Amino acid sequence: MKTLKRKHFKTLALSSLGGTLEFYDFIIFVFFAAYISKNFFPENLSEFWKLFNTYGIFAAGYLARPLGGIVMAHFGDKFGRKNMFMLSILLMVIPTFALAFIPGFETLGYTCIVLLVLVRILQGIAIGGELPGAWVFTYEHAPHHRRHTYLGVLTASVVSGILLGSLVFLIMNKIYTQEELFEWAWRVPFFLGGIFGIISVYLRKFLSETPVFEEMKKEQSLEKFPLKEVFKRAKLSVICSMLITWVLTGCIVVLILLLPSYMSVMLTIDKIEQSYLQMLGIVSICAGCVFSGILGDKIGVIRTCILFALGLIACNFLYFNALYMPNSSLESVKMWYLLACFSAGVMNLCPMIMSEIFDPKIKFSGLSLGYNLAYALAGGFTPQLAFFLHTFALQNLDNALRFSLGFYILFLGLVALFTAFMYKKLAKF
Image (cartoon, rainbow, N blue to C red; front, side, top):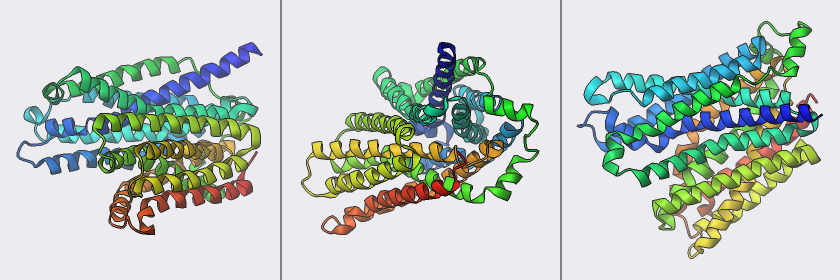
């Protein structure tokens, strides 16, 4: 029994560590976007267009996610979860490491921009296969009565990649001057990311294939074309997956990536305090993910989803009321923000639900298809929508329309409630 527990712990620990480091590699680009744009675009280009083009290249990683996720999942259902798990992190390590050494515009001209786009596409392909693969791998390895807890820890670890990126950004700004960062020091985080990735690749060698896949292989019951079977008999499950992924995307993009910068302007706090607040929000959302997983094992997925969805609605209503209400205290806004982030632990219902609505023979393909399509779509329009709603709210602080951005999060809470009832109909276990 002790050996079994040690084996499960090793699987969870190595999967979680790899997820943290790989998501760090994917997200660190956005923290150093200003430094990248300065080095990779012509001097005569305005600062606006430099940054616009840099963020556009960052978005290319999201657009590449469905391709990578679907292809890698297809082979994961055919040839094994572990093989694709190893491939995804390798695909992330190589371009991240390369970015630390690619010469800038002064040396390569427009070729460096092509290489930058290629780096982001490869990273997008890698991340598209990594998280769905990690969820499936962990779920199929976990003890039956701890599956949702394991998923909660894994999801929290992946989100921690953003926290790691924030910490590295702060440390780099403490150690180096802005001149040094613009000249060469911005490359250090990407070099570190490459080292982190190499360590993860080595550690994942010690993982074993999942018992579920081994059993299917032994029984010769593997599907020849898993993706075809997904479209044939799991269309409703894909729709359910896309809906709950939409909730996950909204929680990350709005609450973690966008709102801290909005709050810094509205509450007149400096960039350092903004970073600390963002990091506390990440810690809070990670705690919510772990708690939702534990709760899922105790009271079931449906009740957990309903509870967290209602919490998301209530906490965000109170948070946005405090944020946009004139004369609200800074401490009050911070408190409700952290509670809103904790309730965003509903995002862990994404793997909890998706892992149980697909047959094991097509689980990787179905989960990856729904997740990556929805993330590419929602990730594409959410930042622009959030900015529009935030601007609209600032223009209507004296009436109910100040909740504009809040209404979007409340709507996502309703989407989460709806998926709970879809899950009840679709669950395979």
